[in-house]
Length: 374
Image (cartoon, rainbow, N blue to C red):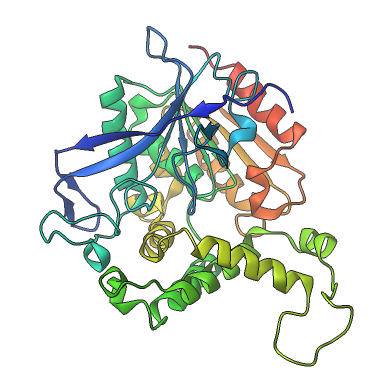
């Protein structure tokens, strides 16, 4: 692995009293964002990169906490001195989105009006709402223009949204393993996952906090379903095949195949720390994302508002957000004369490829970032 980790880091918290008008029509009267920064902001404040997280991500992008040395940031392999997001050159910012469950204001936060958790009363948030909130954080940090905004999956969609909503405040957009909008199949996957949560008896209409319980079974099933879609068939075949845990059939409905054991482990682990209401909000934000709606479905017309340069990257085995979806973005940008670099990377990890430590993939990102003038 080139370069090295940035080491111990600490989360920070920003409070905003200015109300935030949401796309849904709701209003957050005040809110907090938890974020982390790595590297040093230069005198010109021109070297800042915003890293946006995916559905289950958060602000802890890189490094580890001094009191939790095993708690490594979710994209640690790409951030640090000598790594593609070189913290000797860039000032990197990671933020937990509104509606999250890692410290930013969300359903499990206290509603100042009631003195209890927001629960089901927390308003639906859209990708554009996150971008507006991130812009206020940029203001607080004194950053007028991001050198780049980047992310994978839902994070890549945020980078795309930044280029449309704040074209003067973003010089480069790095959109990895994303799509201009979800397919019907992807919306269907999200709905089945939500139904698993909504129909859990412990959900209590989203107000399970008051009942001192959590819809663990529903969240576990939602994660199991989602996890299947993040992996490739070849990877699952190579990793598990049809291996049996005990070498023979049990002729019952217990855990027999290794792949079943793996999925249940992943589901249990996720349900142990993630908030179900946050999961519902994040999947809805995915479903609603479609910038082309602003121009009657014409993505080219929408992308005419952009001014940034772009790196669009996809992965050959990603069947959830296929390379064809990334090429739709590329075509819309090229039709507007934008500077676009496109990479289709052959990796066997499905949609999760964007998280992997792969030399070729990282070299693509590194080469692009090295050409950014500060």
